[in-house]
Length: 236
Image (cartoon, rainbow, N blue to C red; front, side, top):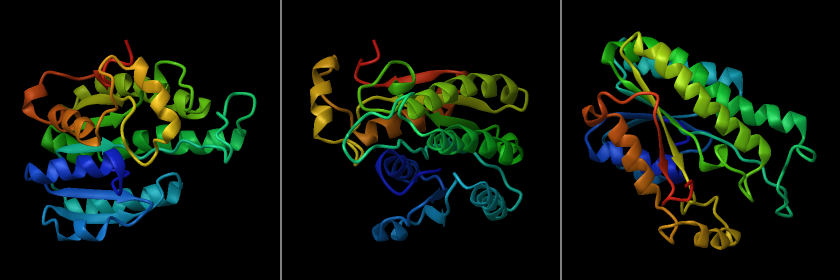
């Protein structure tokens, strides 16, 4: 599980742990102290997956922890969405090109590299990969920048490509696309989006976590290449 220290990632870790799964995680920050008492959250590796060396080290360290055993699920959640200090949306014209490259490094190339790096233990488990995409990858979002939105659209396409290739080794690959979820990334300006949501509320991280978890179980054993929208109907 990547991007595990807060928000959707943290909620997803807690859901898997509650279901009795052993969880190995990484993020740029340490996990909250109280999570160290979770007996199923066995290892957390602090690293920056946008740094190719950090990503490589994480793959090596996590595979060492698996010790040749299977990996039942890989959840690619870590992502970055650059913002300006004055709330301006970073678009195609005003977005720094080096910033675009950094966004794609974490939001697209890290999930690709991690899937490759854990292909063997995933095959052993006949496991699952779940990529966390976004509603912003499917429509123009008033606050998400262009680099973030395009990277998430690319991750949706990558999910489909991976699903076909990984099916050959018995691994399912799906995506979950959250809409407006109540996390630290959400500011007061997002309240204006609620009228656009058919369910007239924002979602909770736990609701995204439930979708991720179910995709990794036998309940969805014949589902691959699918993207589930957890948006309250906002994507319609």
